[in-house]
Image (cartoon, rainbow, N blue to C red; front, top):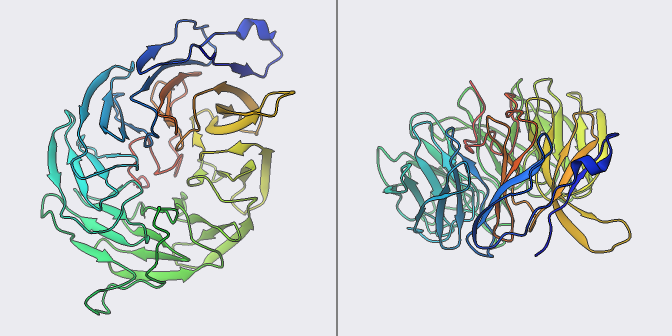
Length: 410
């Protein structure tokens, strides 16, 4: 069996921190070699070798994710609670959890489903004949917004109808000029053009659609849009002052756009951003591109950066620690390995733990500081660190929170 390795960076002798982690087979495995106060894998669970969606973490600690054979619910200690079939086809996007405990999943077949906390299907949308690759965003009441592989936007309200309430699309088959977005009606077909709606504290909806950033109200009316000098835009993040941070590619730029639709600043990244930026309470923006982890001051000046081959965006804990997935090589070896890692608020690597597969999305942090994430080799993990809860900041991780609401706080 392949050992897991924990690498810590401290003046304390390394021997005090050594712990052995066993490779984990199908099902849930508990770590049997825990050292108090030292980051370690609490448990892992695998339903198979196919990639898992990102984590959705309920307030009670239950863990939800999608695999190729269903939607899984695990207890906080990694025990299977239930498995629900995929009622409308494959789900590769993380689920979103509403305040009432309802689970929303968007499928590649173009449908949206709702499950209750026991895994029972309670609602299913009419098909859209589009493909959903990203988590839905949750608005007021039971409003749900989801983007497709064209980064078009669909709005649903399960209490009203299974049908789309309104939509903003690039193309209308009927020739209508209403609700038509700029851009062209082409898709890469595999969901590479991925983005999801982000909802501000004022209930306004931000949509990154191809090269354009849109601001819409809850009725789907376009309030403004701006074309950005980059390729397809990624996932928005919303700062405490209402600024929207959004990255493009070809070339890779990070933009700051005011709630008035005007560009405040732009900085160049080393490569495409992983997930969305994160924003702390001081307005510092953190992000991962292909080669580094970076922190920018609110005026776009660099605070620090560190070279790291990231494969997920960061998640911020209340003590300022950043958690993310990365690749690295052991000294003297050419083979890259996968890790979940922790960085201090000033950009120093605290520790890294070897895992099976690359982290799929920004980790989710529980109230007790446990870190949850999934990998592209079919593993869900729980890692214990220093018991720091998630940061209560404008945008501490991808989709804002561990429930993937996609919504900034009031």
